[in-house]
Length: 318
Length: 82
Image (cartoon, rainbow over all chains, first blue to last red; front, side, top):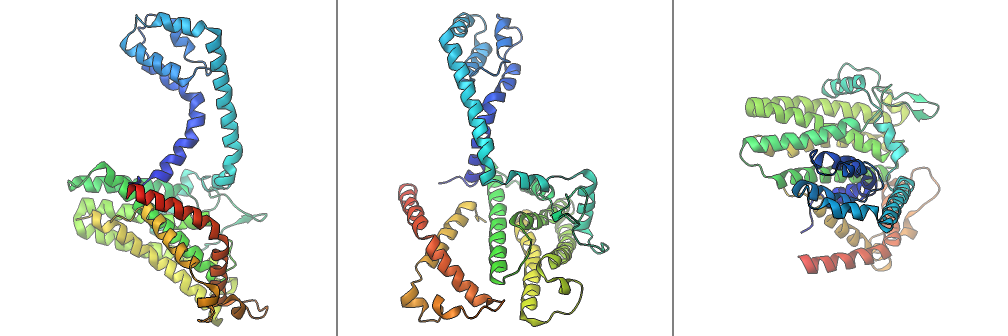
């Protein structure tokens, strides 16, 4: 049985393995007892040339056997062969880190991702307000600066990945809370919820990309933009479930209904500018089958959001 | 509600397999979806049908070899782990 979140945890563990090898020294200091027999060992721990195995052995021995096993370890440390081995190990780790840093850009576009996390508190507050109440906002165009879109910090219309990521994690936690209040909680259910929400997100992205390809839309909507827009619905889901926990089914339906309508309007107004042709976006009536298809596509994407919001949360509120 | 990432991977593999078994000569031509019948002039709008035919043809061309590998791996894993 493959674990449900195997992909994510494997990737992150591989990436952190190399870089953690060098910084692991900082973690071992609080573990050793301050009243150890040989203070010389504590200071040696801070150098980055130490291997993890050696320190694990020392930390374990430091916890259990403070007096007896420090002498063999001092002899182990003074041995020049082991010194060389530790130096070699640390240089290997440094090389590995360099290799990962150089090649990571091929699989995960790190520099492009950094743009989506360039947010500040004011932007997050304004964007959350926009997600819940998009009816008064007039100008939905993203400002450009010499052909590149402006960072989200400077323009409230720009998509970001901070809110979707945080909202997703909060949704998982709130789902765990809701399940716990109904005595249905178990830790693997959290993983199941996360995996299910991620799978629906992936399915949505693939379906929208496929339909954008079939309708031959010339748009600058990148995949990461799409993930950001589709991740905004988690905010409404969190609100609905929390209200459902506090006020029962009535509160859940009220808040979820409000957030569904808001997300519908938000998605239509945002996607209209990206998918539809420039003339149609300004309110000129559409003509021709092509623009009509694009309008239907926008409406379908926007209508899928409330459906998914209900589907992913109704089983949490009883 | 056990819609996990693993089942999504399985479903994707099955869908790509389904596209890969559509034979060009025996089947697609008979329903009018062969790639030599569709692509008309150089008008600016290819239309959904020709986009679909292009997609099927490109998936069949690109995924032929990787599908062999992925299917073999899936068969071995399913035999071992059920």
